[in-house]
Length: 255
Image (cartoon, rainbow, N blue to C red):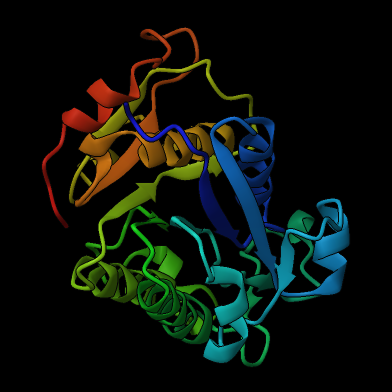
């Protein structure tokens, strides 16, 4: 008989826009999952309901992560540095807004050191699967996202992805396209590699669909030891994706 006991899953970045969706979706599937969240501040913890299963920790501080990973089966990493717009931008005057990262919260600290700390802590705790949500665009060092706040965000994300792929822990790396705040389950999802999808008209994806892909990856063996780009067709084009096993089987790229 298959092991039907629920998997214990930790979602980091659970206070973020995609993280909140993953955390809530897992919470709804109590027969399959025991969920924990990890957030950076008590305010974020309150924002997602303040339950006892939400840990407050700073991913830049390796020791602070350790309690949250004890006894988990899987880890979903959704932490990311967030660029902020410099005040005083007036869209009516044309030009482009300028962005910055708060001191100590640059991509190097959050997306590289912070994710490396999470991978190390999870590996030491014996975790069986790590799902990391990254971003398309990482094959191009001159991608515009890298110039935001001089943060080189895609460079550092890719470094963390490589570290995970080399860790020996079963992994799934999902490099999402441009994230949209739209309903999930309405679109045909597309997997690709090496940013090929960026050359097409299908470069975006609803956050809810990325969240669902993370949860499906927890349950589908074909998602392990793979890294892929993920985007979606526009609504009303194609058939909404229901069979995630078939979707994950479309790619065999390990990085």
